[in-house]
Image 1 (tube, rainbow, N blue to C red):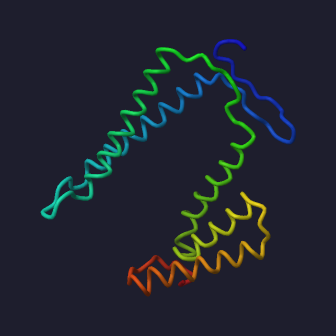
Image 2: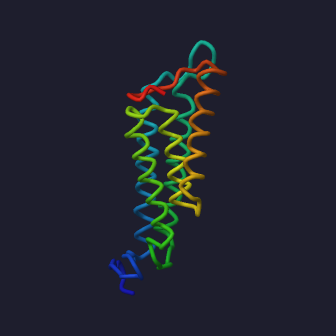
Image 3: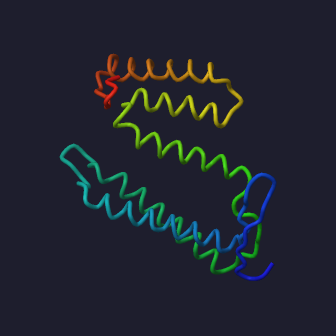
Length: 168
């Protein structure tokens, strides 16, 4: 494989990117570094310490620092020595992207469905997409989760949840 080679392979029913793992790891390290720096930036705008102890910016700041340090260590190790090559998007990666799309769809639909129904639908659809569960079992599980979330948070703990347009 040539140095820096990136190509598209046709594998079975779908496409799979073949990329030098050094480039893939470097891209991942840079993305994680940017995530850590963004976390530090946004958490520094919150109060670090309050009159009762650590404020709302305390934990995110330290999480951002840890993420940034880990990303820097990864990038330094890549620069020093890294020789493996392989498939960047493996066939199982497709399932990971499905879950990522479900998470994005869930958060985009929360204003419509509300918290209880939104996360119940997320759990039910995730069960169907990732497992070998039937629609009836997934639907019953989603109904149970919606009722459980509503009962535990709204009634038992008296924590108001976003209801959305549906109102539940």
